[in-house]
Length: 173
Image (cartoon, rainbow, N blue to C red; front, top):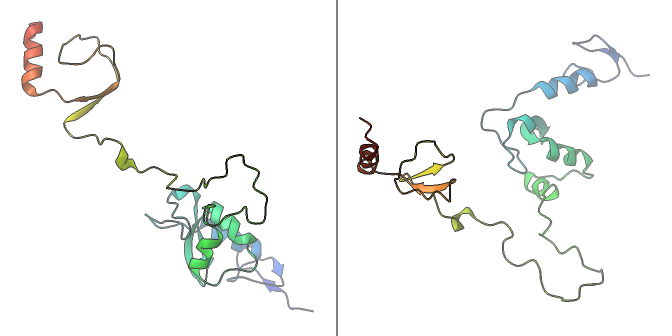
């Protein structure tokens, strides 16, 4: 018969302790460990702090998101390196062809996995400091070049001279 140990937190008599705690107290202690500012998941680079937890991984405490931690718990056998772990929990399904050994039932058989599926933001025009974002239409009807048909849009910022001209046409001092 194995010896019973006393948990340092709840004083429960258990056969196994982890850092002086029973498994229940140890689990609560692990869940309460904060992650550092600017932390990212070691496998998927998730950075939302509300989904990150400190996890004991390869003998060190690492930040890991809830999703990756759940996948790591299901891995058998556990990968031996962090690079292998990243590959094992990767969400990228396009790395390998999953249709090997299965009949291709498509009418037009062409490779669908060409190019990058996520677009870069470089393809869209950048907003400069010389532009303002117009999000509402004010009751003051000043003609400084805005198209009344397009109430919401990105427009060039009017210069001080254009604003002065518009104010002077209204007769406002």
